[in-house]
Figure 1 (cartoon, one colour):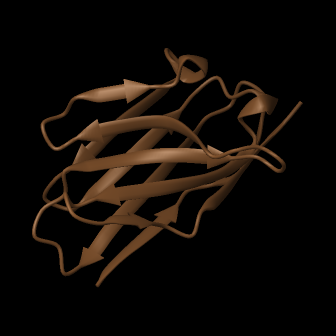
Figure 2 (cartoon, helix red, strand yellow):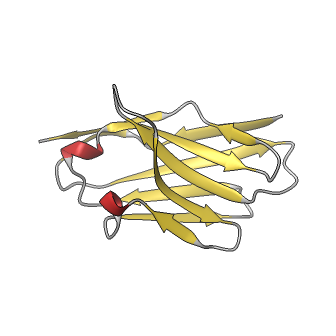
Length: 115
């Protein structure tokens, strides 16, 4: 079994910053891909950013230049540095871990940006 735990969400004012962390633990042989998604009420879950084991990154257009994803392969941890936050970034942020066979999801962490 693999456990995925996110942390770092909270309430911040427009223009502020937050750093999300996600750690995978348990029976992990390897992790191919780690990603951050978000889902606002009434909307579909969308990709925010992802990073492969080799360090290749991908970002949603709406966060390019503001968010940075990084990972620590030794700690099986992925980070999302979010700067210049906007009210439309308000959402529950979920971490996904893909081992090459199975997708695992965290429980989500709430990010709220006040105007």
